[in-house]
Image (cartoon, rainbow, N blue to C red; front, side):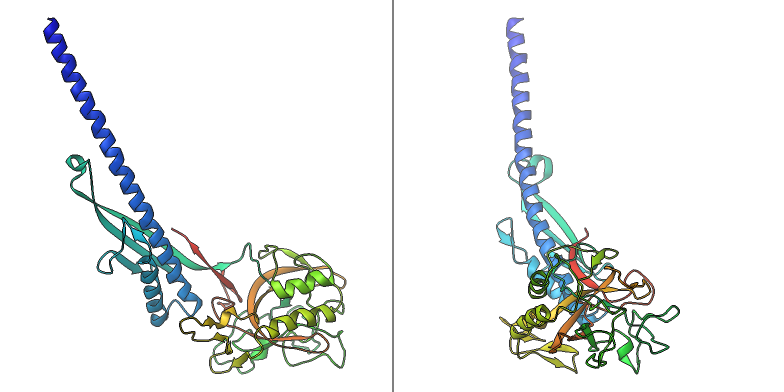
Length: 374
């Protein structure tokens, strides 16, 4: 009996030892597979974000832009190593476009197993995917310049003010003759007025050309009040995140000195920048419309800016100290006048501000940001 019991204990011990070794082996291989999947996920994340960035350069519906997105996605997905080597171009990475403004990158890698082949086979295929989009930015927007202008409107009675019943424009119709009433590509816009309402020096070569009320010069206190803060925000952009629907404090007065000082810094940082009427984009020696290797793109120019917009239908009553953000748009600073009037040109690009449909969540000029959605 004793000999028989000893034999049973030995068998149980051996079986338990084998089970423990099996679980240990399985744990090692499972951990390895999770590591490989993490590396794959990193590659697909990078590829999807890089691919979606192509929609900053044009429309998702353009086959050439989608081809650019495909090339960027693959190039970045191949950069990082997965299981000690980069992914192969043949069969290990696929790129698709599941919805508007979105890029999906799938990746796979067949890896050998070490200890758990008896359970899982000699190799295991690990997969990962990511979806990124160039989405409309309506929240936590930073880097804005401290100017706020209204959407253009039909000034039916010619009084320079928005009156009830006058039509507000958030789009740019095809073939429109008078682009001054719309945010159309290249339209010259007064971004910051420098002279009081009714002044003979008040320019009329853009919209909006006059204030809604005498004390509003389109200046905003995005990062705080005072001339020095306002000037620094022109140069560096705002640090305070804002979103559509937020109320922003107006900076009283025309702030001629700080406006000229801050704006001149931006102009001097890219002094040779000019407007290309054919492309409806700015270009200079330092910032190219079609950059080559080592060159900077036009959108990196200090003269390319973003500002918030307000809806003139939400009236700015006399003496009101705030405006409500209705959207965001991008412009190129064309000039700054002696009276502190800043003239810009509207940029109709998804990266900066694109006039969307009259109806829908993308109505009006918008900003776009890259983000992973899956």
